[in-house]
Image 1 (cartoon, rainbow, N blue to C red):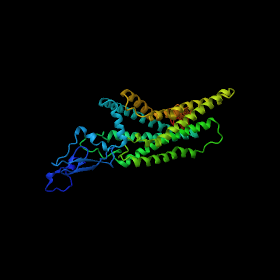
Image 2 (cartoon, one colour):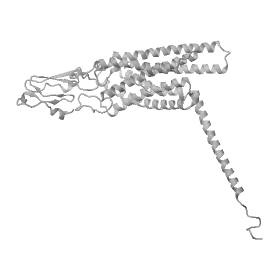
Image 3 (spheres, helix red, strand yellow):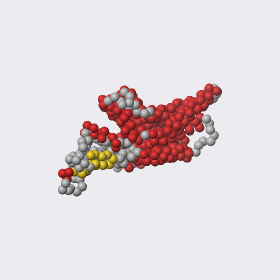
Image 4 (cartoon, rainbow, N blue to C red):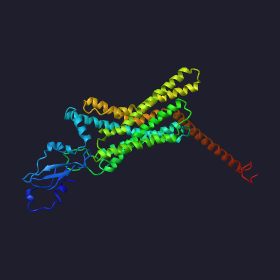
Length: 429
């Protein structure tokens, strides 16, 4: 809707229209034609962060003119439309030291978004390459790499959804401003209510699934190093990694739908309800840290009390120790850093340090995981080198076989060709 549509108010005109306030567009809403000394009540607009179940009112004076909203205070006029999460966010930002500090933090946020774009694209490329490697080489088909592939797929989904939302915001969505002269475009993810909610639901599900597969990684490593005879069936890993996040997401979804009336659940992660899924994630990180400490203790004990173990066994234990240490960032350092609340009330320097470090770790996480578990893995490197050597030998063998075949063909053609008799041309004596 724009000012032209607002001026074509469907309210029928009457002889005493001079005693009515005319339909008017204030840059946010269309106020309909209203009787003098009356009150116009209009539902809040469908902006992100606005509760559409609420309404705002405006007085029409006895002279038939609208009460001034005050363009300088237009934002304050529509404060009643904001959801509690957005109100708390604005309150925190307002305590940060004025407009100048706010503008600087917005610049930091834009720079952080560039870092996120680079990290997510690099992570997606690395994860897809790793999945292809684990799926192509038969020597890498084992229980551990199956878990790696599932973890990588959860990370791929999460990074893809984040990247899609960021691209949508960059191309389609306009920054919200109450002084705009028209509604934002109706296209794009965040301007389509159900599509937007679907994307954010998938975002939280995939993130929870990442944590669950991290738990499976720690559990499998613990079972390996403690020499447990009964290994968990892989179907239970699927239940933990893909099934458990469904139940957590459904519970959170039911709670947020009943409380958040915003068009696209804007700032939903600032609500206490978010702990329905964030709490279990932190618990998983803590359990994985326990797995890490236990496996480290078992490894150190084996290497200390068994000095007579074979070199092959000792080498295998050291590799397991390195894998355990590499698992530490995977088990939650990057995610715990991202869970820390944004220090919006702090100085620009503190906010910049938090923003750049936490978003760098979260967006580059897929790249770091692929680097540690695939590209720097000795088993993977050996499989790739062996495959390259085999292909090189096959090409050399085909080349030699081709040269032998042409030589044999040439020799056979020479034997079949009749030679003229000695002395020159036939018949010449």
